[in-house]
Image (tube, rainbow, N blue to C red; front, side):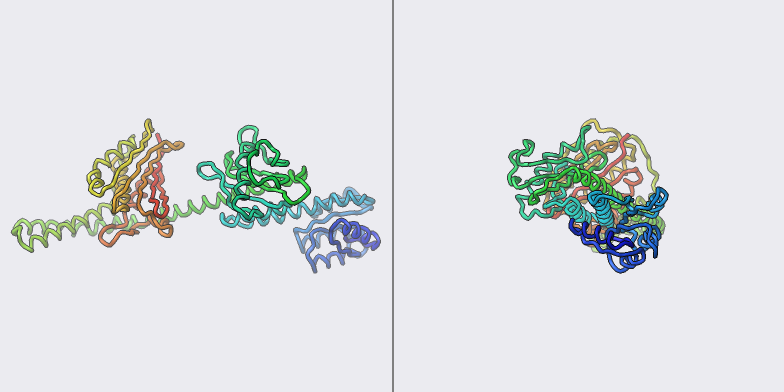
Length: 505
């Protein structure tokens, strides 16, 4: 409280103290500025006309020291010009003396609420890390709405809500009952009649929540929706249990503002995640482009001497008796040369030096043709093929042979992941404007620490001599050339699934 008249400053300070605040009085503009420089204050109530330093000047100095501090100008000698000047300098509000204490208290409460929202917004927007943001959201909800308990429930791919983080809920049954409240009330946030916030008074007596155990002690419930492109992505449930005061209109107003901040923060976090994914794809594309140029040159350099080795080997083989050690050695050389030529063929394909013939093709037909080539191998390895092909799939624009190569690589990898046999499930469907193919195996899965590297060129987990590490890189290159995408999902001991998405015609 800054005023050059001590009796006024002390009187207002006493009134604030009686209402639960901790005021400090300063008798002049300069002492007020010195106090702000020396300590941390949330709010300043200040006169304008003071002999040592006027309130407008003191306001400017205080804002330099602490831009977040809120200032209420209170004077009996001000004009409209001084009011506008003070607001331009960053004052929260302007009061004319004399004023009633209840009028001042109302302005003080609004100013401190703004300060609290600023602090909470700064905390929420201080991170975009998906593991930190939910905890900040719930901590902030507890503070801003004076709650006894709160939880953040997020919707999974199937649309069902699950508790991501909670506060004040120590047992599994408590979390389950609060989650059920969110689930039953989720319809309030969908469709044309969607609400920005829902209030439930006496939830134990609300028919919509009948039969939910363990909610008799909850006095009032506030539910805030988290929306993502007009779809309910989650709900923040905020409850008062021990407090005698139920949520009122002021709380609803705070909740709407808080909900807007949370939705914006989560949107920013989602955009950051998408940016990271895009950046990873760009890095991968650049890596493959550089390696493709190198691979193309190396393939041509190696192919010529290999052709000479193969020709001479086959020439000598014709003059070597079949039942001799020399004949067997030459056959081993021939086999090794053919293996090298196969690797070079993959390298040339990887370098994109083969002309692509794009035409309208049926994905189901490509897969069936591919299965014809590898059906016998699958039988020998005791691998069962399960087909779940959607009927009436739209055609895609693609190179039939190259798409066969993609599916052959994926099927071969799935077979190799099940050395004792198992099942490969192949499903196709239309997803939006794309045709989606999923090839899932029942193998041991891909460890999480290497899942992000499987599309890297020459990366393989197979023993030496059994894999080149080019198969998935070639698949990625072909699918990128078709303006599609390929992704992998895996869980330990639950197998792996590769999903190919291609634009539909």
